[in-house]
Length: 158
Image (cartoon, rainbow, N blue to C red; front, side, top):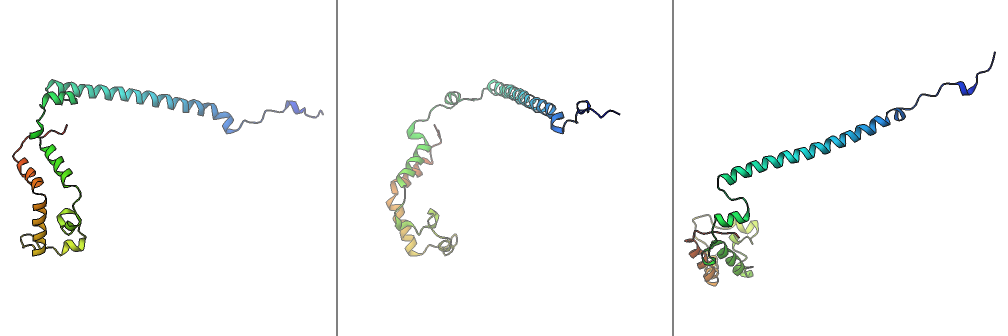
């Protein structure tokens, strides 16, 4: 009997990765292609839907862009613009002096200080009443500008 020739032996079975790596590569590539096509298609679809909504809004005569808003809402003169008056008020008030720190409505108080304040409708203690009077006196022009602005109806944030 003849001894078997080693070159005649069958090839060993390839491993899992050797058999399936082409499928894996093609699968990942296919997924990337499908995802890319899906995202691009979705963006075109959404853009089309947004353009349709814009067309409906424009057909109704409503503004969409800042230029449209400028035509739709005429500019407000600075003297009649409440926004500018409030901005000026905030600039003029700025950071208040430390003597007003005990006024709770200005946000400087601690929680314990706030709890000691009188209930709504009760009179203020004399020292607090004096402090509020000083605040109003010191910032009278600023408060007066806010009071006058209540009669204005025009607001423009531009």
